[in-house]
Length: 228
Image (cartoon, rainbow, N blue to C red):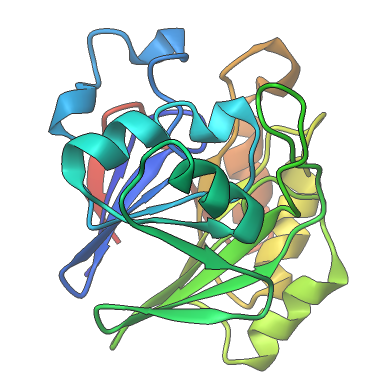
């Protein structure tokens, strides 16, 4: 089974087939992580960034330098971090797959925007499909619902998915339910919710809506670790 630790907002680590990935590290800028998450203890094998917005990349440079983990991102973001002295970056683009020590990571489409904290262009946003020997998952990144998600089902679907569901800046709960159906999974971990006012959600209502659609939604607490 894969092991997940949730660090708030859209940030989490997941260990699959002995390879640990860190997605979208935004920790020190999130007040809710104070006293719960110790940045110095996060030492992944790979850092994966879905797009350039500050609430997805804020702590990537610090963690990359302390851990030596390569930064995987689109071409523009990877080169931006190379310019900051990150020793190893892995630039990708949509449709490409990279072999992460035996675990395949494929960059797929997302419908959103992407810019660096200074407002400069950060390439196109992305999601990722990760396939290990026995399990697979989809990380949507920040996105609207879109029909390209159905291509993931055409490739065999995934065992579980990390879906943004805070609405306002991304798809909300109702569209996330459709997204789960599009990618052919019954198990969903919610991300991109509650961090600030526009994306706060009603937990009980969201869980009930997923249950009524024959889907299981987990809304992890910050710092919570669990197997899936």
